[in-house]
Image 1 (cartoon, one colour):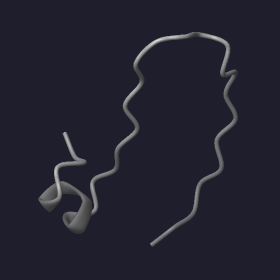
Image 2: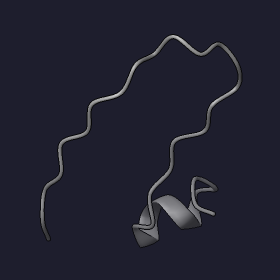
Image 3: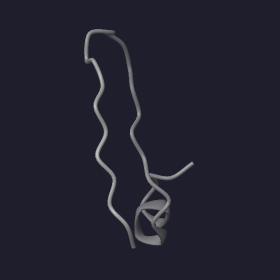
Length: 32
């Protein structure tokens, strides 16, 4: 596994969905 750091501006209101592709997260409905 690796590591990543992201930087973003949180100035755009709206419904945003963050997800990842780890098997556990996909099984619990947090994947795409």
